[in-house]
Image (cartoon, rainbow, N blue to C red; front, side, top):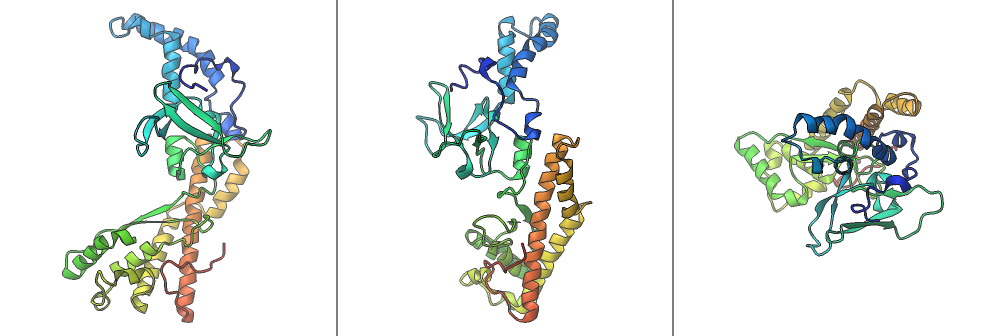
Length: 338
């Protein structure tokens, strides 16, 4: 399909390839756009031409030009490889009609895939993936590896159990005394190992994830919370061991208390619980909630699930510490209830 040369030929479009109730009423119907263009041109563009004759060129203010402008604004932007260009460079490309297919988070699950855009023919091919979809099955595209906040910002929707959702954590730099400066230097030197001041946690159900709280986060906190005695035993040569084992019992207790305080504080900021939000999601589908409110609710559910999973992770480690079976190895996640 030549999405740029023939985008005016909307009369063959029957309906979008979307079946979800909240997707059907989003107001981006292409047929409606074509039908509405003459009305907008008569009521808006023509009066503007009369009011500002020196600012607007009549040749560029036709109904066709208005429809082109409207379609360009409503088009989704994709990062694509261009034929004849550097294969390692992704170029931002507008893709009209991309809303005909819904997003799935994994390219493996997509029934459609986007091939390269050819800037010479202005042709973008959207083809079936390796396995042809069964008759009557919804067609999907993987827009990209996007978290729910990105989907909400860029596309105006969110999805339940998004595998790319994270809860981000940021720690302030240590103070200026000698010990704290050493910690900051070790954090910088261990950046490639995963040490640092910026981290994130993820849900326990994410496929292929071996942990909720990453080894880099645990190791960084072990370093940041060390007392002078513990710190004296560490240098860049043995820094990596903090990813696998605790510095001391008191240090590990400080790490767990810090994580618990962080996650509990985050959870307390929300006026509703995860359970209440999940019940609301089930109750409000098709019950008058606006699309924006519904998708925001899905985003909140995802964030709260991650926070609850992280607290379960902390609780499991605390139980092991009390029982004497300390879980050495920051990269190993304890078995926690799902």
